[in-house]
Image 1 (cartoon, one colour):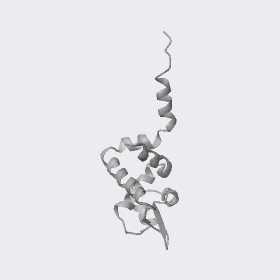
Image 2 (image 1 turned 90 degrees about the vertical axis):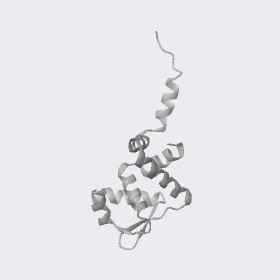
Image 3 (image 1 turned 45 degrees about the vertical axis):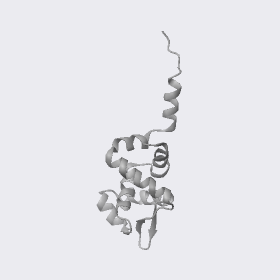
Image 4 (image 1 turned 180 degrees about the vertical axis):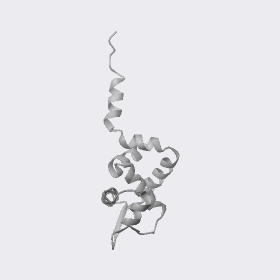
Length: 121
């Protein structure tokens, strides 16, 4: 998984629920989903879906339409490309996506710094 996808995960999605919601909407491009249908399809709570659609709208990945319906509509071709890449990686290696989602950039810096730490003997 490349750094661009990792950054996209951490800054735009922030949770596995949001990934699942985004990929559901992306798989059904052009379809508008009422919030209740999203709750049923994901077997999630109203709160999880509500927070998810808010976050995905802020990230420019979906749009709200009339009557509390939502549709996949990335704000740029680059976002669409990242979502397609995410779908592929998540299907093949879901644990790698989850790990990248929850790892912080400082984890890599700490690992790098630890490589230079002098060991006491």
